Image (cartoon, rainbow, N blue to C red; front, top):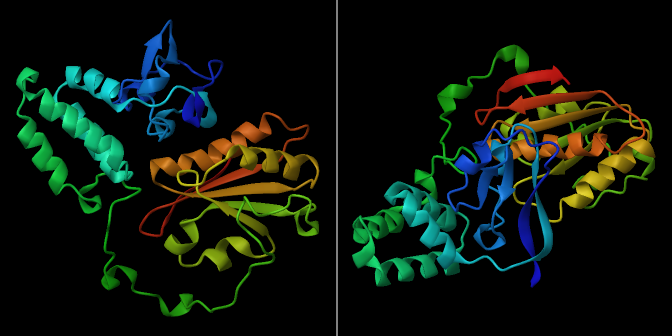
Length: 287
């Protein structure tokens, strides 16, 4: 076995609601004895489609020694659930650029098309014509915001003044022992938020330190939790403001903070801000 990314389920947090199993077309998760279980390492692709489904933050991606993902075993399991589930899985592979697995799946289906209860040619045609613009996932959907939707008010003209207080800001790069984090009010923001919300500096950053991350695309995120713990325990930060997008995958950022708080020797107030993909504040609340 070699190291690869795979999901890990926290049994204590899991309530057995089954939402993660519903969002796992590969069939790697089942509810057994009232808890979500990873029934086979070979069925888990490690892409984490199930993470945003979990309301308890009980699922994370770990890089551990695990059996290799087996696309053929996944396909054998998926075709039992019908054509639509198969299409959802193949689109999932194409969206994430998993070309090797996609080719393995299509070749297997073509070799076994006589045993299928649907027309595999229809499936292949739909996958061939599928592209990111057709994706219904809000994290990847292409939307053109027309200029008429952003008519600025005369009394709300922005300047180009930056409120950035420090560098670096990416969570992998920052040192939690840097002096500007001492007793600071900290912003932990998803990468996209400052691009979506036009007044980001003026609204959120004045007098605060900031770090940014992407819970969907960043790797080795375990270090993020460790750094947040250090910022709370050692840098003695005063508050944390978590700013994230409305898309489901962004919820992982808040889960990083929640998990870190479970291992700290002091508690700090946390504010959660959710930004819409149209650049509006949807929610702003202290947790």
